[in-house]
Amino acid sequence: MSAFARAVHESDPSALRAVRIETLMVNVGLRCDQACAHCHQSCSPRRTERMSADMMEVVASVADDVRPRLVDITGGAPELNPDTRHLLARLRGSGHPVRLRTNLTALLTPEAEGLISTLADLRVSVLASLPGASEAEFAAERAPVFAQAREGLQRLSDAGYGRDRGLRLDLAVNRRADEPGQSDSAIKERFRSELTGRLGIPFDEMVIITNVAVGRFHERLERERSLDAYLLRLRESFNPETLPRLACRTCIDIAWDGTLWDCDFNLGRGVPLVEGVPRHVSEFDLAVLESRPVRFAEHCFACAASTGSG
Image (tube, rainbow, N blue to C red; front, side, top):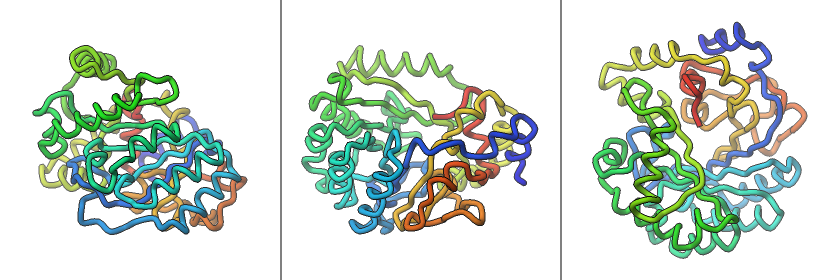
C-alpha cells in the first residue's frame, strides 16, 4: 500500500474505491506541437502514439453503453490526431456531452485548420491550458509562444466560445506546489482581469491544477534535486476533505491503444488498474469498473493537497 493509500485509508477507507463513472477521459495520442515543462505524458512533436479510427469507434460504443456525463478528449494535442474530428462527430451525433482539451497553439497548426468551426458547430466545450497571463509567466512552463496561445484563445472567442451559453470555454492553469503564490481566487481574478478586462476575451470557469510529479515535471524535479522536497510539501498539504472529489473515483481513462487507467497521471506514470478488473476497452465492464479499487501512488498527493487539484 502506497503512502497516499495509507493516508486515504486512515481518513476515509471508502475513498479507496471508485463510486461511479461519470467521465470517460480519452487520450487520443501523445503527439503535441509543444514540449511543456510540466507535461505528465512527456508529449512532444516527436511522439508517434496515436489512437486509430477503429479504436475510436470502440470507445464511442462504450460511451453509448455507459452514457457518461462527459467524454473528455485529451492528448498530447488531440488536434493533431487526424481522426479526432471523426470521434467528436460520432460522439456528438450520439448525444454525448464532449469536451476537448487544447494547449491553444495547436489550434493554429495546419492539421487543425477549420477545427474551431467544427467544434462550434458540434457544440463541443473547450478546456484551454494557459499557464500564464503574461509572456514571462507563460514561458516558464512552455516555449515563448504566449502570443500564439493568445491568438488561439482569440479565435475561440471570435467563434463564440465564452460568449455563447452553448459554447463553454474553461481555462486550466498549472502551478507548482513548492512555490509561493496567490490564492486560487486571486489567480482567477487576475486572469479574468487580464483576459476579459483588458483583452475582451470572456471565459466561463478556471481550473487550478497542481503540477504532478510525473513525466517531464518529475524529470525536472530530479534535475533540480528537489523531488523529495516537492513530494514532502504535497504530503504535508494533504487535505482529507478533498477525497470525495478525487477525479479517479468518478472517471476512467482510455489510452490511445485502448488500455484502461484510473487517470491520465497513472497512465503517464505507468501505474495500471488493479489486477482482476478489465484493463482494455474491448473488455469494458461498467459494473466492475465503477466500483473498482483505485491504484494510488506517491504522485496522487498532488490531487489532495490544500484545496485539491482540478
